[in-house]
Each structure stands twice: as structure tokens, then as C-alpha cells.
Image 1 (cartoon, rainbow, N blue to C red):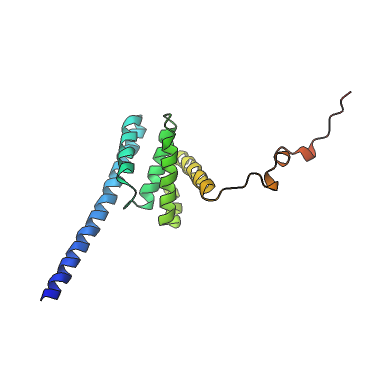
Image 2: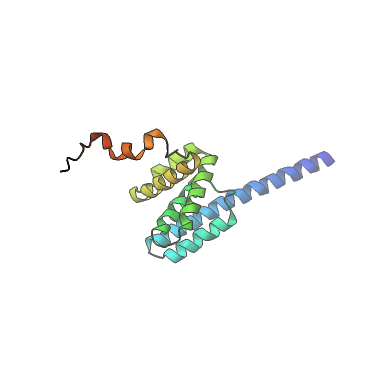
Length: 158
């Protein structure tokens, strides 16, 4: 009987935990929707406050879609303020989402408008540059190669 009580208690605790995780993701989705609506209405301060509150709670329990949406919102918000921290946080959101599931994050792009896609690919490029830095001193990136000195004829000066 005691074993059954422990098992039942464990199952109940697991059910509560799963419900709480689902509720957190749903709440984040609702808040991101509200932030999107605030952006559409030109209420950038309100949208910034909503996203800041979500970031303060941490990324745990957020889905790839929620993290991708936050990254796009933060990039859009950075266009309307001098808050460069938005770009850094957007990059972190993207990186967290990519760790969870790169495939789901890729599927998320099909839900974006062309303007949002531009912001998404910008934050993706920033994150990729951080995670896979390029050696700009390598031979293929020399200044002469970049501007095409080979194809410029020398100047005939008197």
C-alpha cells in the first residue's frame, strides 16, 4: 500500500510539473502576441517592457518558436531605440532556440513576414559569426583580394 501511495504521489507531482511547464509556454506565447500587437500599434516602450520581463524570467521552458519570436521582436525593437543590448539578447535567444532544435527553428521561419525574416536572418548571421568565427587574416580575406587589385591596371603617372 505504501508503494502505491509513493507511486501515486510521484505521478501527481509529475502531472503538476508538466502542467506548469505548459502554462509557462502558453503564458510566454500570449505575452509575445501582446508585444507583437504593441509593436504594430507603435507602442515600442510597452513591447520592450513585455520582452524585458520575459527575458528576466529566463529561457527555461520556452519553446523554439517563443525564443525565435523573442529574437525577432528584439531585433525589431533595436530599430526603434538606441538599446544595443536588444541585439545581444536577441542573439542569445536565437542561440538557445538553436540548441533546443535547429529543425524546429528552421520551420519557425515559415511563419514570419518578409520584414521579420530579414531580422531573423540578421540575428542568425550574428549568432553564426559568434559560434563559428572566421579568421579575417586568412589568405582568402586579404584586402587586395577583396577589392580586386589583380584586375586594376597600374596608373601611368607622368
